Length: 282
Image (cartoon, rainbow, N blue to C red):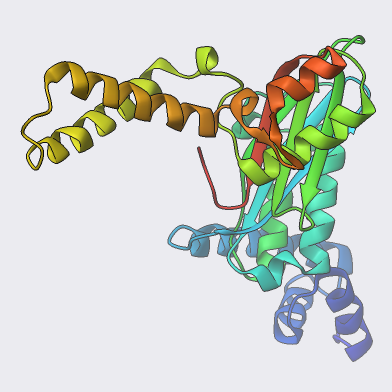
C-alpha cells in the first residue's frame, strides 16, 4: 500500500513522532494508522526505558489536591525545567492528579500506583509514552495519599505553580488557619510538629553533631568541664529543635507569635502536615 503525505501527517498529529518514524511505522503496518500508533508507542516505550537509566530527573513539579475527605500529594520529575512547562508534561501531571483523586485505592507506594490499569495500559506505560514523546526521562518519584474524618479539615498551598506543595490536617474546620499554616510550612520548612514528636534517631544524630562541635571548641577553651559541655550541647540542640519544629516556630506573618500560640487562639490542633519540594528530600 502506498503511504501518502496525508496519512503521515495524521499519524504525526496523533503521536508527535518524527516524519521518518511515522513513515516506517505505516510501512510496517501496511498503512493502518491504528496499528502504526500502537507500534510507535511500543517502540517509544522500549527506547524511553533504555535511555532513561543513566539520566537524572531533578526538575519537575509537585502537586497537592483535595477531594472530600481525601487529599493527595506527589512529585513528578523530568530532566529540564523547559520540559516541566511543556503542555504534554502538564497533561500527564493533571492526569496523575485525577487518577490519584478518583481511584478508590489508597496507594501506599509509587510502585503500587504505577501498576494501576487505565483501559488497556498501566500508569507506568502512560508515563513512558510521554517520556518517549518529550525525549526526556520522566519519573513519579513520590506520592502521599492522606485521609481525614468528617470533623477534621484540610488546608493546602501550592507555591510557584508546584515547585513546593504543602498540606495540613487540622482537628476542626477553620478557614484562617487552613490558609495560614500551609503558607508557613512552605516558607519555614518544619521537620516535625513538636519536639516530643521528633524522631529519636534524628535527635541522637544531631546531638552527636553538637557534641562533636562543642568538644572541638573545648580544645581552644580548656576550662570547659564535662557538665558545662553537656549544658552547651543541650542548649544548642533545643535551639535547633525550636527552629525545625512547627509549633515552636514564629508565625510567618507575625514574628512575635509562635505557631503554638496562634493555634491556641483558635483552639485547634495539627493532626499532620506534609511538604513536597521539587528535588528535595527530608
